Length: 158
Image: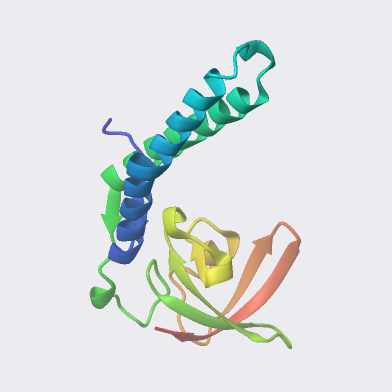
């Protein structure tokens, strides 16, 4: 187990995962078991779509529980108060513009466990974050994305 992947995350991100895990274990798991019980009462399981659906949900819930337990067990908490705000790194919020004439965009760089681009949090494993990590305000950075190369300029770090 010494080789398990570490999951960098904020304290808030870990709390969110713990809450999801608790919900899955105490609420969702029981709901799925009840659905399986009801579907079994319908008789022949070989042609029982309700049973098949409930079993698929059960497999998903159990898989997600296992994933969350691993992520929480291997969490590495980022202390946001100790971050150097002069350099882009995990836990910082970066504002940048696409060169030459893009709109300003801001993202917080987080671990993959709490990434949510629609909420302004991108994974440190994403191409744009990888390109910006270690850079400073005012630097132009080339980013290799699946859609091709783009250039951005770092405007601020907080």
